[in-house]
Length: 112
Image (cartoon, rainbow, N blue to C red):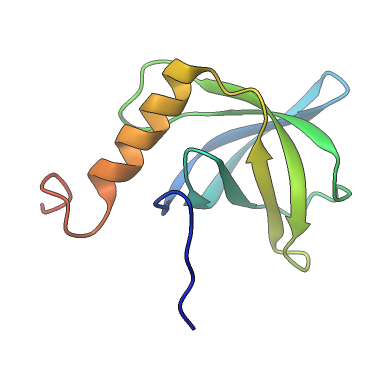
């Protein structure tokens, strides 16, 4: 099945802080399908679709955390949740886009 997506996507293992109502949980999680527009985060924490979360995560290539609000768009059957970034800064969006582009198969910097 061919799927057309708006932004390229990659997966990585990174620290992720998931917060709601001012309370954050720091975890070492797999972030799948990371793109400029959102991500799928592997977690067993339960959230409702359309919940608004505060996210903080770190990219290996960045010095600072990426911080944004995100809306839960779908649930992964207990395996995680898909989120859409709501208010990610333009600078952070560019960092994510550059990181994803650099790590995609076939990009010049992904060959090691």
